[in-house]
Every structure is written in C-alpha cells, then in structure tokens.
Length: 423
Image (cartoon, rainbow, N blue to C red; front, top):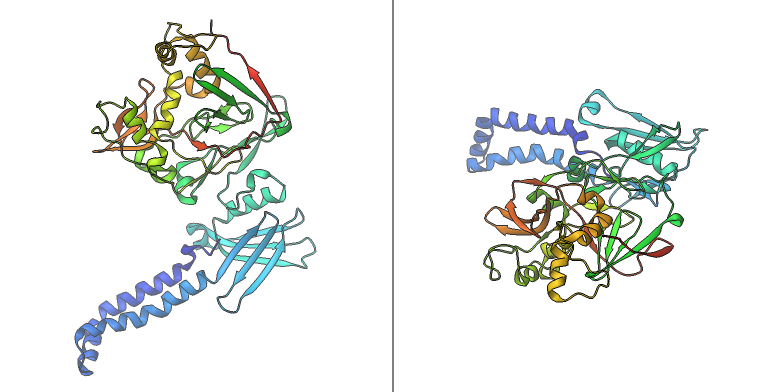
C-alpha cells in the first residue's frame, strides 16, 4: 500500500495556482520570451518550470514510501530509492492501533495509523493511508488469526458478529459488492468458519449417464469429465458452510468481461445455424481458442483462479436445466445416443441431478453471462430456456464462475457415492 493520492490535495491546489498565475500573467511571459529573442511558444517553459517541482515532489514521495504486510504477521515501512530505510513491526494481539484523520482527511478518506505495543516501547506510523478504517479492520482480523484475511489487501472481505436465535454469536460473511470489485480488483463469496471444519467435510460423487459429478461440500461442484470446478451459486451470494445466502449481483456484460474474463467472439456466421446450437459454435467458443483474464481476483473455496466461463463450458450445465414431466432417465446408465439426448433435455432424472448439484441455480431464473461476445452489441448468455442465447450487452445479468482442475484438489477427507432417486 502506498500513500493515498488524495492526500496530495495541497500539491494539487498548488499546481492549479501555478496554472492560474501563468494564464493571468501570460503577457508577462510572452514579453520575457520576446526580450530574449525567443518565440512566444517558449513562454510555456514558465509553466513547466513552475509545475515541475510540484510533480516531482508528489511522485517522489508516493513512490519512495511503501507499507507492506508480510505473511499476515509483520508490518513493514520501506522508504527511499537509492538509500533505503526499512522498519518492521511484528503484528500480535498485543499491538494497539491509533487512527487519526484531519477534517480534509475525513472528507477524502485517508488518515494516519500508528501501531504500538502496550508498553509503548515500539511504534510504527503509516501516514496518509487510504481508507484507514478498512485497514484497521483487516489488521484486526489478521491479529485474531482469521484465515479469511490471508489475502494481503485492505479490501479483503470483512466479517461481522451477530447473535443467533439460540443466543450464540456467529460470524456472518460480509456481502461482496460491485463497487469493491471495481476499486480493489478483489472479490469473494464470504466465509463462515463456525459452520464446518475441513475435517468434517464429506465429498459426494453423483453418477449420471453424462458423467460423474462431485459435490465437494464447500460450495463447489466438480465436473469430472469436463475437468472443471464450478461455484454452485452466482456471484453476490455468500457461502455459509451449509449453503449459499443473499442475492446474485446483476451486471452488464462489458463489466463482467472486464472484471472476470473475456473469450473470443462467436458470431452468427460460425456454423450452420443462427442460434447457439451445434458443435461448430461450441468449439469456436472454447477456452483454448483465446481467453483474456479479467482484472478482478475472485477468492472462493481456497482458490483464486475463478473466471467467467465460456459458452462451451456453461453449455455443460444445460442438460440438467431443461426438464419437464417426461421421465427419459435410465437407472442403468446404458443410454443410446437418442436416449442420451432425451435425458439431457427432459425428465425427472435431469431435474433431480441439477437440483442436487446446483440447488441455488435451480431455485432461480438462471440468466448467466458467458465470456463470449457475439458482436453488434450482443453477447452469449445461459438463459434458462435454451442452452445459450444471445442478449444485449446492456442487459444486467448475474455471473457464475468456473476454474480448470489442476489435480489433487479434493479437500474433503472422505469421498462417498450418492445414488439419486428420480421416480
């Protein structure tokens, strides 16, 4: 973290004063250039000479002062370019924190933080820290040993305490926001450590005619055949340890692509159909054909490589959305090609699997953006009525996140097979 830009408001005012003076006294500078036999165009050097010390001072101070947190246990102040000064301060539960803000600091949201031990024999000061209240809250979580604060940023998810009906205190995850994702380039799905420990987790493998899926007991679902891991609920909801709570965050496609990832454009001219049907468009939208990571890091279930899925990837969810009263499922999982297609699009079997794997999605109208644009102000989205459809990029829709498996990622100490009943 570096000093807040807004803490240099005095320098900004000084620069505006220099510019105003130069404009007001332009005839003087023009006359000076003329007296020296120079073109009046050189009168602009007067402005540059006045602004240069101010600009140098701002950039020198900002980029020679850095405030760091190492492994959540040590505070550090580093100052200087060539000759450097470094001060370190151990972060323990005995450290006291003072925060001071001037009147202007409160308006512009910056302040000075002072860290000291109970006997006041050691002290470290962070001047002009941006959003000091949030920094203090983050450091308090580090001192308490909260693992959700392991992301070393003052914008990591905050936790608050509340009282449950039985009189016990529980920790409720703070909701992620679009503003936080844009400003800090970091977002989350909350965390509720009081619900379930890793040692208590039991992963469930669910076998279907279209491949095996694993409920990892941490809010994620693994598609073994596709080698994908999905967060089972849209962004905006928070994992409580037993399910997801709150509501999804709707956002425009351009914002979603900028924050969470953008794939290649797949136009109508790809393949033999105008709609998003057929193998040609699915292959064209594949991750391997081109993908640019978004600017925002998504932290959930212990992973930080979540991204917006391509149309090909999100299409793998569609077999379980489209079901009606016809039961085309087969318990023996020995399906012909036609029966497999029917199983994808119809029947209690498909509905039962989807409701088991993605209960939050099955309970809502599942409009979800993909990472693939279409051109002409359109982008592909999973619309809940077809596998993927085209929608205006100005529409606001939720997003679901996916990541590629890298191997050895089952956290639950036990794995059990689960048989679904759909009769």
